[in-house]
Length: 281
Image (cartoon, rainbow, N blue to C red; front, side, top):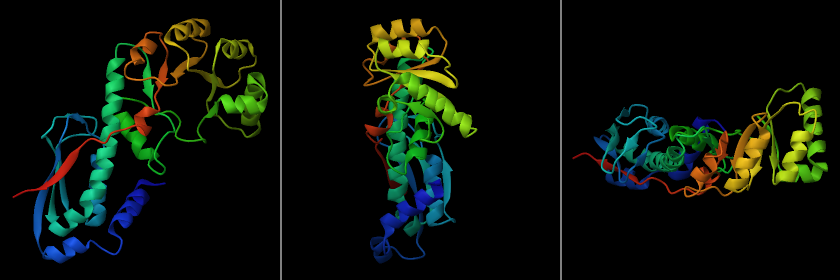
């Protein structure tokens, strides 16, 4: 879904028949300004989305962005200011905050993960474990936090996971079927295969032709076994570690030299970053 459509649906959900409180209490011609303030330390994401929300409600509103996406803030820092129709500011407030708080929470956690592995070659990846219809925004937030995006959906990569392997009849059959499908449909997209143990890894490494296979996902390998697996792969394919990796364990995985570490918790287990909009008086 396009971002403008997401914003439109979010505002329609919030407004319904109208903002009766603002309509009842604020004179139609009243103007003013407000500041968006961080209430805790973190990484900011979504200022462009907040701007679009305010402008969708009232294109005459003027915004000044004081903190760029991807930048650190401390509690009390002013992120942006908005001025214009007081009623319009209040009508846009909650939707803008909902987007920014969620996105900034994702960026903050991603930054924590990325900071822990910055001396290693590993890149932190998100997954498809996103809020329905919010994927593009949540993946933007991951990038603002210093991570990178895995596939956006089912359409931009062939990712052969355990269920695909089981239904296909095995790893060789699944790889062969993927290559055949790409050739028949004249597609050029990367192929990744998930392995759950050394037996499955050996099946991938011994199977020819690998075709378009570009990456091996090592799922739920211990840090010790991951080191052995990376050595066995010997740079023939990109490597990705996944499966329950946390802030407490991510360095143990990164020391293996793995290329990517995917963390579903970046988007599905997030605390929003607290912030509030305060009128200037």
